[in-house]
Length: 240
Image 1 (spheres, rainbow, N blue to C red):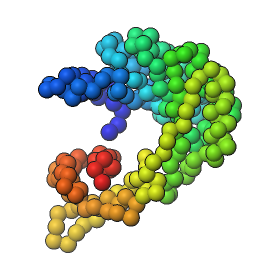
Image 2: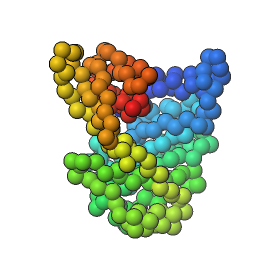
Image 3: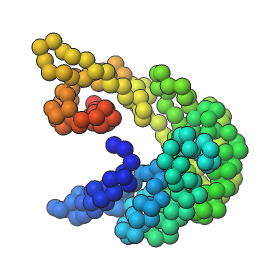
């Protein structure tokens, strides 16, 4: 969990291992691997110098520094211009198109002028080596944010593409059981006569799992439980 490029050495080692031929690795093509980042510019440049051909995905979410400083606080250290410059360096070194991740949030970052600005900045910085992956926000109880209406979404795509930048909308799956991205809820509880545990609720189904240091058992699958809330939820999201 967290920012991959903040754990740079382990991430690069993992990429090399899973893309190595069997039996040493999994034999997965580097072009099928995506490294997603919020944009630490020096680390992006360092990754480019590894001469890998993985896809770089930059979680941008807005084209202006004022809003991104709030949505993605690391922007205070590496502003958008610096991130896009590093992304261009990666595209030039790898020959791969950069994916720009953009979670569309109603009345926050879905304005027409932001779509225009996004397209203009990306076309100027990356030319033909960029693609926008628009992500509809999944409804999450208790969140102050909501997904943009479909007409707004379509207009956003149209305006980005009008600037010469390909833009597609990610297919959202799992909403019917509240298991789409961002919807997993974990509720901690103690069971009488047992070790402290957590019950992970996914839609109408739930599973009881052990405390950190124990084992997560879902059906016939067992996975280690890590020692922080986001990791616990992440393992459950993969296994339930």
